[in-house]
Image 1: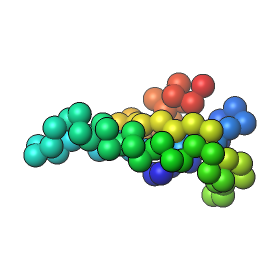
Image 2: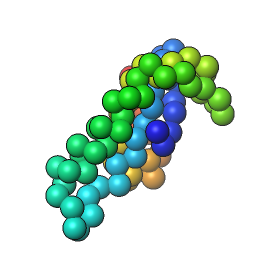
Image 3: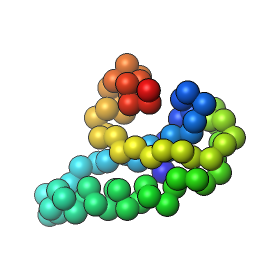
Image 4: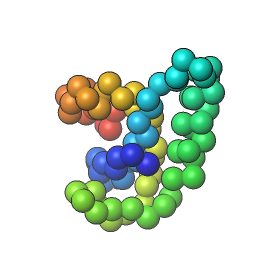
Length: 78
């Protein structure tokens, strides 16, 4: 998990998708990112701004969305 947000009373784990490298098939990177997120649901989490409660959802976010800022991220959590 790269980031953790609390939105609407739930903790959402965020995996930053860096995209595929030139030597990788794009589908492989997508499968790996999803496989990393599956075990996170239900784990206890919290701290540094996030509420102490289990992770209820995991989302994959392209790196550019993180860099653009909060206005682009907000719709992902509602």
